Image (cartoon, rainbow, N blue to C red; front, top):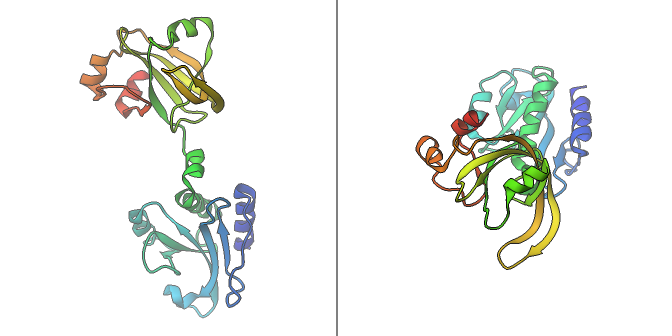
Length: 246
C-alpha cells in the first residue's frame, strides 16, 4: 500500500513513472529526471536482515539522496532510516516503506532528493524566492522617471533572477542609494538589444512595491553597516539588510 501511495505521489508531482531496469530484480523501481536522467528515487524490496532487522520477511525501502552528508548522519539515528542500501558511502539513505515513516515525511525526503539530483536548470526553477540587489545606472536609463510613469517596467534580465524574486534597485551616482523594492512578475522575456553600450538578450518585468528616501540606504550606510562595498551586478542581499529594508 505504501509503495502504491508513493508511486502515485511521484507521478502526480514529478510526472515520473517507475522504470524496472533489472531482470534479476523485477520489483526494483527507479525514478529519473527527464532532462539529466539521474535517479532521484529507487524503490527496492530487500531482506529485512540486510538492514539489521530481526525479521525474516522482505521489506520495501525507498532510497533517496540528500544534499548534506551530515543530515544523512542525523537521520539514520531515527527509526526507519538507514544508510543507503545500494551505496557504501555518500548521502544516499534508505527509508522503510512499512508505515514506520509516514507518507508526509517520505515526501519531504523525496522532494529533497529530487532537488539534490536535479540539473542546474531544474534546480534554478525549484529554488525558493530570493532577494537581489541590482544596480541602475542613470547614465543609461532614468529609472526614477520610469517609475513616475508606471508601476511596472521592463529591466535587463539578471543572471539567476527568476519570477517571484525580490529586486532592490540601487541607483548609481549621483544618487548612490537603494531607491526601490520590486517584485519580479515575469522573467526571461526574449529581447535583442545592443546600442553599443548596453547589450540585452532577455528582460525581466519589475513591479514597484516600495520606495525609499535616498537618505535611508546610501552607499556609505550599505558599506559601514552591511558590508556592501559596491553594486556592479545582481548580487544577493545580506540578511541584516533585508530586515532593515522591510
